[in-house]
Image 1: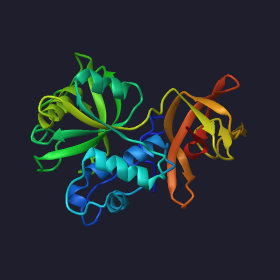
Image 2: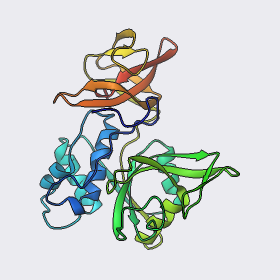
Image 3: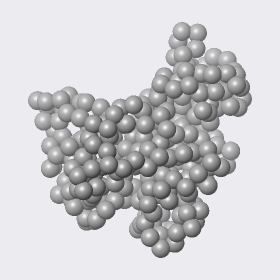
Length: 271
């Protein structure tokens, strides 16, 4: 397993989860696949819960899940630790502010809007949920119909991972995402929101080391102090570290230590 985004990218981007994972309800698991990524993001890589597992915990073996059902399944899967918040009827500014504030979310879209673009979900044209992890203005603009770049204007974009494709994390035109979401929501936008990970306080939760760079082989800057409150400037992708189950994770907290940047593996700090 290898990290799927460049080291140093911020906020942390967990490994994409492809909903067509061979499980019985894969075709209707877009919401749960998005939840897998939300769990990874808000725990900075510490937890990886499959859509298949979330489906079992939901108790629904028939339909695609509502955001409320998915939030309950996530609570069960994480021992009431991870609370995702369904929000309905948002406008474009509210959605922009969520992502700009450091909060990841799933967003409900109508794929009939994206079908004619390079951001399409194959040949699918129905309702869908995709994961949103970041927002920014770029010097280049994405044409909202064909996603071609025009360097003349600045343009707003969201970083999106579509669990119905193998495309991994891609920048989408904000206008395209808004239109697809509004089509699904009857003019408003519906989202499933994770907690803020950027510019927040976290406590030392387990033994570990502060590193000069986000890598377990980097220079050791001292111990993580259990119970100490750390100011997390950002989360980033870095070198691999091992979860309790032996799988690899790539999430790191960036803090300031003795006036210089330092990094802590994702599992070492918690809310």
